[in-house]
Length: 429
Image (cartoon, rainbow, N blue to C red; front, side):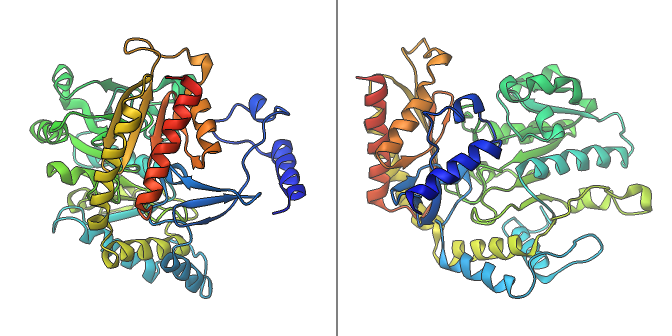
């Protein structure tokens, strides 16, 4: 892409686009030159000037097998030769049926047997909430309407999902339009609540993303499953971030032998190619909706079960099997853990938190004191890292590392080295 075209793209962007999670006073400032990304291959992205970067956060936690993976590319092209999209309201198609079968096969027999397809992580959570409430209504417990989430939770930005949010920056100003949800900091705190009116507890298992890549104590998820069983409460797992191998197993809940009542999946479902989400649940839940029209789940989306998305998802699952992705990933997880010792020893690195192939590097002025929010240290470090060939994005002053699984050892080393250099340049020490 010629330099003139780069300038034109930036000018058009600043004139017409509204970016997510972006203050456009700063974005549109004359001195700000957005990066224009135009190509990708494997773990690398290329900008309009031909510069290459390691995709250090998998294009916002979505890409699994790398950009332009030949198997996913071919699956999408082949489906384009047939049809791109057909309605799923009153119709079906082979790709959706096969995808549902493959997703169900990832779980022990007779556990999660039903698949509802939607568009993204927020909608995957949203439908689980609606299913949970309607399930109780249709099983003689209309009083079970409350949802419990955890401090620091982030489950999406649609109104239902945002009602569960525990981060006021994202959702606080919309509280008047949200349903009331309660937040607890631990499983033990659930004992202070009236469990007889709780529809479900919702959690991001093992690691909370938007809270700053925060790790839950080992065994906490199994403890939560036991509490829900003892009190007759449904358990919803939001594995939008952690699903499809990010923790080293296909799903985070496998680490503690937990089967939820609902699981929300998205980001990596299509390998990071196209928007598609899935909410899995059991026959017990599904059967509560059988009967007359009044028992129907009246919920859906125009692009439900999009054929291109289903083709990409099936190709991604095939890659897991054929390329033994999880086996190959184990060594890379260990390598990342070893290499993260380099930034861990830097003066302003307060903590490095890793779960599988996800890590958060938290920066603080001192162990007890955060950097002032108006210094935007995390953002400055990410900007400096870009100059050293690494693209990622902070959560406040925690830098996220979550590369595609195809990244090689040299690139993992380059990613960590670029971050360590950027921290020194911005923070000193």
